[in-house]
Image (cartoon, rainbow, N blue to C red; front, side, top):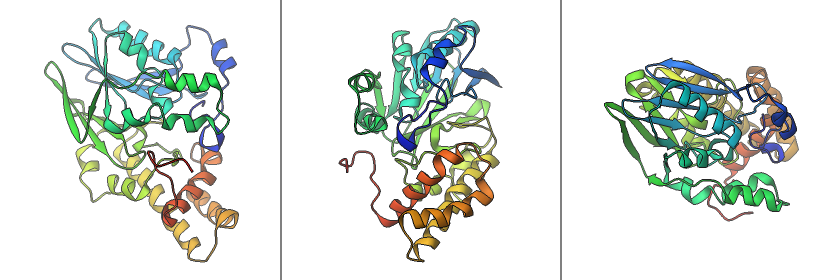
Length: 316
């Protein structure tokens, strides 16, 4: 997967050369019909799309959820939509600002869509994405971030979009970045979680506040019950509400294990060495474990100690 490309926060399992060598007939994602005109586009095993996306066909138009990590994948998604319907693409919802979910925005804007996101996405899309290229960012990488298609419309807490008789609820929830949106298609019982849900996959915690995230995914909270049905993660295959609960369990387990080791006065590499085998017992077979396990431990440690940088904070 070419998502999150820089340092240990970004995974590099497919090169640009390999991607360009693919046949034009090969899709960088698997298109999965979820019923009632709702489709999930699940990133392929090589990570050629960088993340998951999807779309909803309504009475008078189409709504797209996220636009992948590159324009090639976005064009392929647009092409697949055109095979299914001639209706105009009215809306794109960015679930958060990370590059692997927004890099195809301009493809859909050029096709006539209005891009909608939480207000923080507009503040961060051209600034916070720079950090993923490291300290020695190249001019062409900086230009790539500056050229990202910014959202056209922002919201703060929630909004409802209509495609004729179909209503799509967009809700701001806390946890992954501070600017996350969940997209719910109630008549189809489908929820697009963005990166608030990673199915059997370790998440990127670079921007996360797991204390808030755990509340969002709490079994005692309002959201899991309200969003029960078919659950589309930002990474990993389509799942169920039990998969969402399991992912929330990972965040809780990581927090408790790191906290326990901190109380033993361990820090740095010693803390990582103590925590890693404990989380491996239960989650060692999850996707991205080898990439994100150690960074997850360090990010959780920083959050618990109150030293973790959040999006919008000054660069350290």
